[in-house]
Structure formats: structure tokens, C-alpha cells
Length: 264
Ligand SMILES: NC(=O)c1ccc[n+]([C@@H]2O[C@H](COP(=O)([O-])OP(=O)(O)OC[C@H]3O[C@@H](n4cnc5c(N)ncnc54)[C@H](OP(=O)(O)O)[C@@H]3O)[C@@H](O)[C@H]2O)c1
Image (cartoon, rainbow, N blue to C red):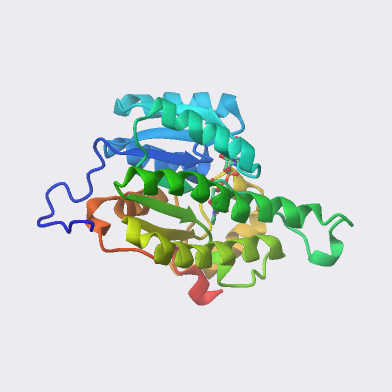
């Protein structure tokens, strides 16, 4: 059983914990990594772009925890198995898994190519990538018998049909990611593994940089809090979910979107 906190002292401390973050080399993943490292965690970044990973490791350096990167394509279960094996050789134990890697596409279904490559690319990364990582890391967490924490980065797009851009594969992958979170919270609770999702709204990263300026203004006007989120704000929520303060929190989907889904 996961022990409850008895005071707020060190309630958000991650000292000595090690986190795997997929897509931790930029954007939200890097924001989460920086927040974790500042709270004392070691970081294993899994991604495909090694150069970006080196740059991320430089940014993480000032916090003085052990941070390393590993090449991994989350769409490929065999590659995930190899990469997770390498992470476990480098770190004794993994306490936190953040399934953050994701891609998006903007297209109506009927305008996609005949192979539906956009559909499969998004589902294979955002949904199946999360399943692959959870399978490989979850088994090792279970066998180590020390519990763990899994955070799936989904999206507020899971709850709405976005009027500004058609993105059915993305919305469906993220909606399934939220329910996968519920299912895993029930299946893995007996191993003291907590599973939660963060569903961000529009946040300032590469992914959102392609939004045309007029649409950018429209979205900000729709948003009760009037601005895009910042990666460190997603990081702060991830720190809470990974920390002793959240020992009793599992199976939740935490929307962090400036109130956008309430008013779009
Ligand atoms: N930004 C937003 O407004 C927003 C809103 C809601 C939800 N989100 C979610 O937040 C997560 C991160 O988004 P972001 O905005 O930070 O996007 P981003 O800047 O485009 O970064 C995407 C990350 O995913 C990694 N990735 C993509 N495909 C991968 C694969 N096959 N294997 C391993 N890694 C892969 C990328 O690394 P490599 O290319 O090096 O592999 C990169 O680190 C995504 O799940 C996204 O859906 C973002």
C-alpha cells in the first residue's frame, strides 16, 4: 500500500526518483523534465532526434541530477523493448513513466490519402506508443515490487470536436488514451502503480507554432484565461501527480487548458 503523507514537508519532493519521459527532448516533454529535475529527479529521455536530446540534456544539467537520453521510436514495440532495456541498465530503478511522445495532423478524414497514413501515424504514436511503453515499463515496475507512477499526456481535444482544425485521429487517440488511463489505474493499482493523465490545452511548443496568427487570436479569445499554457505549467502538474502528495490519486484525467473546453 502506498503510504499517505503526514505533513506538507517534502510533499512535492522527487529526490532520488528516476523518470522516463518519451519525447522529453523538446516541448511539453522537456518542460516536464525540467520541472522533475528541479524537484530532484533523474531523467531518461526517449526520442528519435538525438541532436535535440543533446540540447535538452544541456538544459537539464544545472539541476545536477543524472540525465541521459536513449534513441527510441515508440511506434515500434521491439524498439521500445530494446530502449527500455538500455534505460534499466543505466538506472537501477524506474519510478515514473511519462508517456508524452505525440504527433498530430490537420485533415478531414475524407481528404486523407488512400493508405490513411495520417490516421495510422497518429494512432500508432499517441495511442499505441503509450500502450507499448506501459507494457514494457509496467511489467518491470510490477516485478520490482516498489510501485510506480505512470502519467499519460493526452489532450483536451479528447473531449471536444475542434472547430478550428479537423483532427479526428488525434482526438480519438487522446480519448482512447484517457480511457486507457482509467483501465490501467484499475489493473495496476494492486501493484501500487498509480496511473493518471494530463490533458493539456493549447500550449506554447513546436506543435502549436504552426497555428496561423488569426486562429491563434481566435483561440486566445475563446479561452477564459486568455493565453496559451507554458510547458513548465504542465511540468508543475506532472510533479504533483508523481509526488508523495498524490499518493491517493489514480485514474484521473487532469485538464489544464485555461478553461478552453468550457467555452469553445
Ligand atoms: N502543444 C500543445 O498545444 C499540446 C496540447 C495538448 C496536448 N499536447 C500533447 O503533448 C505531447 C507533447 O507535445 P508537444 O507540443 O511538446 O509536441 P512537440 O514539440 O512536437 O514534441 C513531440 C515530441 O514527441 C516525440 N515523438 C514524436 N513521435 C515519436 C516517436 N515515434 N517515438 C518517440 N518520440 C516521438 C518527439 O521527439 P522526436 O521527434 O525526437 O522523436 C518530441 O519530443 C503530445 O502528446 C501532444 O499531443 C500538446
